[in-house]
Image (tube, rainbow, N blue to C red):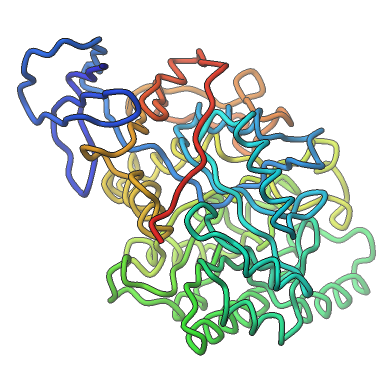
Length: 443
């Protein structure tokens, strides 16, 4: 057994001083205040903070098919260093994950390679509804539907297929919402004006607020008509916030919403500084939109914070607007980035833990994860809130070797990460042969 002693524990909207006893993979006991004498290996946390492991419900680890820029092994390792103990990976691989056979092969790869706990979405296309309906809701996180094309182009735009997915999906449906017709129209207009010298700052005007709203409102409408369990990914606009409910408790919501770290940090003025490094789909938009997303998070219209971690090489990103792919690496820096909001007084520690740990677990009905609770898996992160460091190429762990935060100083640092009761990351050192578990769902 392991006793984590003298910690400030952040859990379930409370912060208290205490200790956590780990027995095997599980939390055996939580002690508030004084800790009884226990025969266990003691790790003195020395007043630092312990939070549940981060659950990232949207990553692209590029495995299989694009492993020259990322793979399950490299990116799960980076995730662990950032305090992400569980992740859910998207199906736009090469080949796309459109059959149950390909999905299970990917799970086999995850079991061999992943340092963190893992789940993989089943992919959708205009013609694989039969395969979608075979998805097991007990051990697959959800069905991914691209209602706008992005990397890997798995666009689903057939109305009958969409209706079939929304009416019959056996588990949660997660959507990328951008209206393809609007994007194509905007692209043609801006290309005529600028040609190949398109300024990157036009990205949020091409992949516009209207394109996002048209698609997300359609998804919400379909979900309401078909009583679908819908999760709308990476929202970016103030206008979309009117689509979501903050009156219903999360566990009772049929329609939930996610925001990504980068959309809470950057705005359209940052394109002049960062260029294609912050080219994402959906696009980073205005400061008004950014503030509206943060307020919606506080007001519980947005339920979950994720990353949409999607690496590309530096050479790929260092390109003209049309040739530079969308996406960037984020899992190593998501928690410390959100803790900057705490240091500025914009979010509390309890709110950050709720949106990055508790809410993803509740949203996806994860079994025994997301909370510091007796009988739950010991996925735990030790954080020093007063330990400044600067992100740069010397300490980045992504396979692509860069991040959009290169050169940024963070005030907080992840010291230790426990996965299923094992100390997998300890101040820069990894338990390299450790492998996480396939996530299970209480559905």
